[in-house]
Length: 465
Image (cartoon, rainbow, N blue to C red; front, side, top):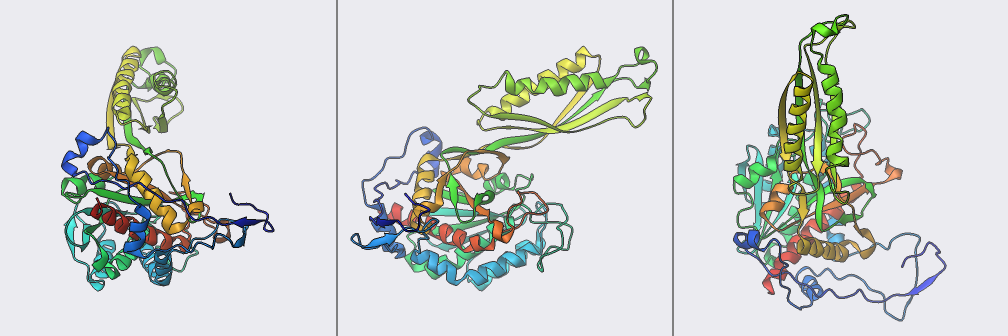
């Protein structure tokens, strides 16, 4: 255990050996094996990992006295060193992509930039996939492991301050520019090690994560056909910079958006008896929706129903003809959104009828929960410990945000990891989707190293089945 007392000494011990290795389950068998654990070979995974990548972690002699630092010890694996060497290039890619944020499936400059870089690295790719997405390949043969980065930005104005700030009215306020830069950094590292790959690495650059369901479209168009494992990242500004966090099971929630229009009979506010006021119905609905969580959800499970906006009328003395509202519902359970939708409709229509009104309900984009496969999550965390260091790998509670990596995780055994970016010294403290969100660029090479380690170690593990 680390101490903040720098004068203490500690007799360093070698890292504990990892003796789990995944056995490949073809994607055709995945649905039938979802609820039973993978069988495991009792082999020394760590020695295989070191053999293929030469990622030897410097472990002090057991007899040496080592002073404990104030913070976590930085493990300098060979792969992390290699990623550090190309860090200026990776940062330059991040800044270039940050300047040109684009929305949903309309990503001409972003897509062209990625394709240009892949061409420069002599990496073949398929384009377009899902309108403007890209699927690149490094290596050949089976097994196939996939790494994913989302590409789109948000329709919000970026404040001035950065010399590479966006000027087009959009902003990469969710960190997708950093996801692309990390994956391009990994592409550069993997290409240089292509002869060591025991299979194929597929790089998936996905459009339209921000509400467009681009992940679902990529899956439908075959982007992950034949893939036996997949990994994705998201930067996370509440985690300290450089930390990696995840969990088994749901890591992000299933989400949906809804709009409701309640129609009555408008008229003069002085004569409500001659009208049908939609406002009492709407007020009752807003309160009643909370019982879907408080009274109809298992207290040990997580659901959310939030009303984001309400509008109706534009005069002080007129009862409006209709009132509209919108919001979101979220659940960590795979069937949670369907259950919420069903009861939401029943409740809305029932209350409207009780108040002599009519209700129109529409639902928007529906993302399922992102569910980390147990063995893939454990595997990814083990690799993260090897590449980045034990002290930087954490367990994390689930989040109620939505993430369409979920579509990949439903198709392929997957793990979705959170990459900490919070750094008060660099001002990287604002939350995702804030106009003040700022990336800690020192994290980029760590993400590139981890992507590379995940791909290479997974392929090597499958070669030693």
